[in-house]
Image (tube, rainbow, N blue to C red; front, side):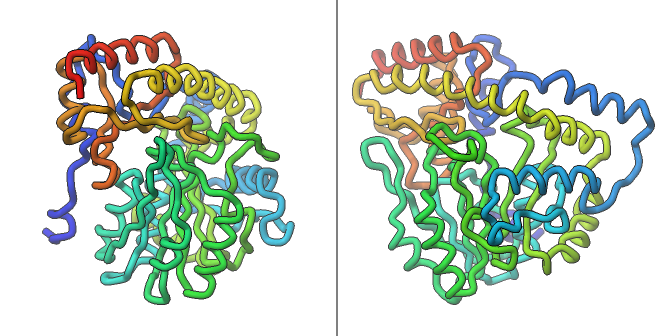
Length: 393
């Protein structure tokens, strides 16, 4: 077996979850998903598709109607893209989940030995994908200040040179909630144009944005770019439409990349299942019924949880602008993974360890606040408070 695969680290998040799955007394906030089921009408669309016998292969790039709908939706959110021309369907590929879209992009762009720069802390799949392809990974870390993680833009630009094949950047960010500002995106894009570096922008949390926004979403690289830029933007139905288990995503790419992407999809998954795509079409057609409600509820969850955590003595945490996570540093010293396991065993509280996302996040914990019942968040804080009282710094 290839050494790149043998050397991959196992998921520390999964390691913590495995220690608590099956225990009814554990409040689980470790995975990045809501505990609310997919809306009925989305599920019904898939059922109807199956009942109509849609169990065959589809076009590699996705159903034309879904690709066209995604192009329209992205153009509405980012009307200034490509000098006002918007996003066209021939640049959209439907994928079997957002993570599949990310992997396809890395497969398309990274040769063995290519230098890849990633902004961390970040969901570990993003850095692992470059290593799987044999890339050489360099990381530029966000810096915590008073609980808020911020970007040293000069340090990032200095790290991106003409030898850098790909920049991977996730904003709004999992796990920190950090978001990019438009002027930062402009500077990064301009610099990458000079160095010839591709940008892989993971914007799956775009809609989960709580600051005032003209188009009800976070700033995007699409706002600053043209169709010909070396830019791949990845999205997913998982978070905004409560569809994590459906495994449906999409990516937006330059026109010249479309033909090759179709071949890659063929060799990976052939296509996303038709009945899943029908569910995606239903979600997209009634997005105004789903996504604003989801975002409003997540904001209520954030606003309930974060102040209670901030009130705990010695805990370091800033209000996240985007995403679905509270990322905080405990006053207790120690390895994040070990602490997370102890919280499962001793407090019945399931959180993700910070060092799952980067070594520099050791000592931090991620709490997914996407809870249908906000009372669960309050109970979780009480459990954490009680544990901290028994384990003072």
